[in-house]
Length: 284
Ligand code: AMP
Ligand code: MN
Ligand code: MN
Ligand code: MN
Image (cartoon, rainbow, N blue to C red; front, side, top):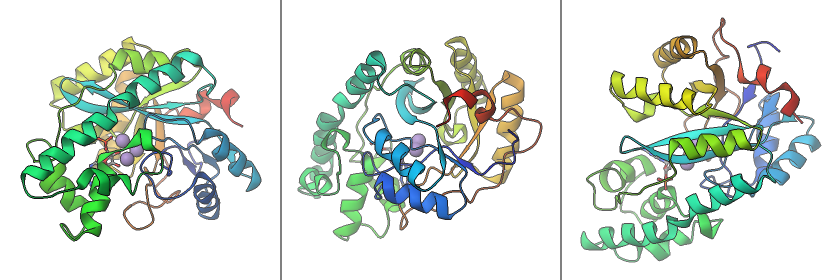
């Protein structure tokens, strides 16, 4: 398969912090011309069977997916797993463990918000949660927009939910080694999600890719909704430097909030190995 493929291998449903069901996403992806699709909910594979069935119903190829939260050098890094066996026991346990702290963290976030006069944010955020195990900052952001504290979710993150802000809570997610291990142990390919988002120094970024490869990681997102056109070029070079396959995905969450629509990003640049070339046997 060539790099000229409308593959969208990163998006979220109500099973994590998206607002559409797996079925609605499949229809939306297909009508936007997506030829190969993966649903990659945060720390959760509960939507995979529905997504695969919905893809089949609309005649679109599917590959299983997940996006695992990792702590690396004190920052949260996301590792996408593609082509995973969703029945794999170690992967399932690892994800359950990763989800485990979310509820307590959310209560601490609400306590932080209460201190600056925003009461009842935990209960408020819960109203937006499709999956009670997967309460995320996004759900707090929706609640604070809905109650008029901020105009849009981006503003909530900027003022309340990022490092140093009242609703931000330090949290330790999975290790890089564990997340890559769970994915590869389940027959999948680990891919560094949206690397430009982490704002690592060049040395830190070198450490990330070196350790990621050392643990068996094989891919990097080059074309993603989180990257600028200049960053496509930067991370195409990273893929070549580290011998990683390249991925493409919108990171679509919601028709109202997402700036990138499913299946509408530019194709992968030439001269790279697309992840789907190495995952051919895992495509449904
Ligand atoms: P959590 O896993 O609970 O820390 O939430 C992280 C999620 O928040 C990400 O997956 C995004 O969906 C969302 N997010 C992070 N930063 C922003 C931002 N600046 N604006 C809107 N959504 C964001
Ligand atoms: Mn998200
Ligand atoms: Mn992410
Ligand atoms: Mn994502």
